[in-house]
Length: 251
Image (cartoon, rainbow, N blue to C red):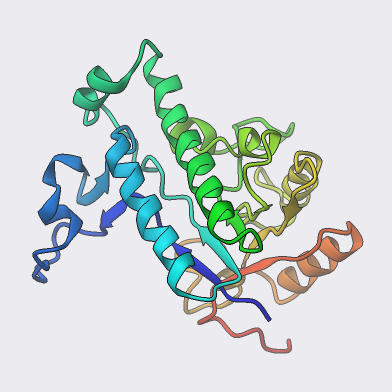
């Protein structure tokens, strides 16, 4: 069994409506100039190099001080809620002649590359993985429709794989077989992109539990076992189940 330290980059405060006190050392107190508000969420601005380095320093501190087997983070880059001109000041300062979209993607690419390089330099055996949104771009592969992770969060996982900046990818394939977000099509497509890296699809066991499925369609009892069986048939080396609070019980 391995222990991979998991964290969400860039998200500082989940809800600004919360009234709990912030420690004087909290990053939002120490560096309010790094913050960008998106609705009721507070994020570190990915366009500020010092803010990106802050996250790298926190993550590598974990690698230095603890005997973790891997470093893993979720898809909290630019927000799913969308961003307008909240980063206009940092773009004006650091844009370096790029278009706004190209600059935002470059900020995330730099973060992914630099954190991976820092981790490798500290402890070469520590694995480095990311869980991006399960759809790279709307319409890819054919028949898939939905939000484009590479264009909304600017998390372009294909670039990371092409450059082998990561050891494994765990795209969040939180959908069933069939439909416009077909698990089979997406898993097969991601497998073709891996470029020698490992693929561990994220699967939504929370959707098999009526108490946590929420507004999403409840999975049939056979859905999760069939997804696991499918990955084994396709020689996909494993899956990541979200989340531990949802036990897998015999059906």
